[in-house]
Image 1: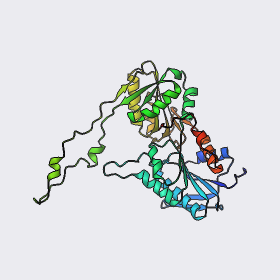
Image 2: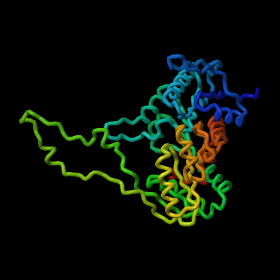
Image 3: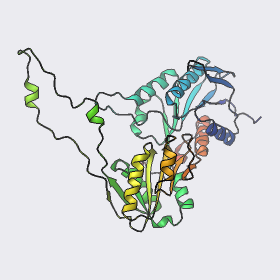
Image 4: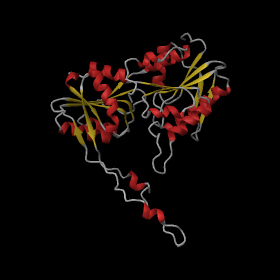
Length: 353
């Protein structure tokens, strides 16, 4: 057995055991003994088998398929360590569940705030994550959050594994990705293109947010508001178009997350129509379904590259994975030893999303 690091225990949930083992090997710290299982009715059962009293506890769990179960499993693990008098409990969540849902939309909620509140209430005192979709999610936590960046690993992949990458154009799949894509283009010394517009979504039509005001039978009820409010034209996105030139170039689509393969493939088809002779897509997080494998193999994409923040269960020769366990391991080591985290953010623009 490897020698343990003094004053520290590393635990793993069931969401990503491969990543947990890689981090464990890099740290030279074995995964601490714990029984983590699901009962026949779906409830999570956790039993910590070592004394964590006055220890730094690091729990690795990510937002993989079956995310709701993994969240509650993680919360039970945290609470078990808290009630066992752990000195500090650090959540190591490479992909933070519900991090995309950080804004109130129509009659919806803000699940990212709810998840953050539950984590802090359970006993989390520090969070390690990678490339939050919205950086403001850090403000939902009542504890420090280290939002690590995977961009150095992605840039190294581009430089080492994409032939003739200097003849490429970095592409933002949507205007919201422009800041991130610009950061990559500047560091790679490449030009930038932006895809704008997409097919109209029916989301706002189906949720009832455009429903008319109710009809009142009581004539005494004031009906001033409907007549005062001016008519506002509904928001419509233009057809998908490309701002920039990719003719005779390699197109490298950059995003923080790929969770809708159909939209990505539409963007790739547009780039092919505009003259790109090879098309790559790279992102930190990749969420795919089993049906995506056939779509990906039949697409015009040369490769789709994601990091291992989320375990990939689809089998496609076009799907490549970048290992960032070294980044996770080093952040754990630095937090445990009370060292500065700034080294992990060197040469990364402060405004990079």
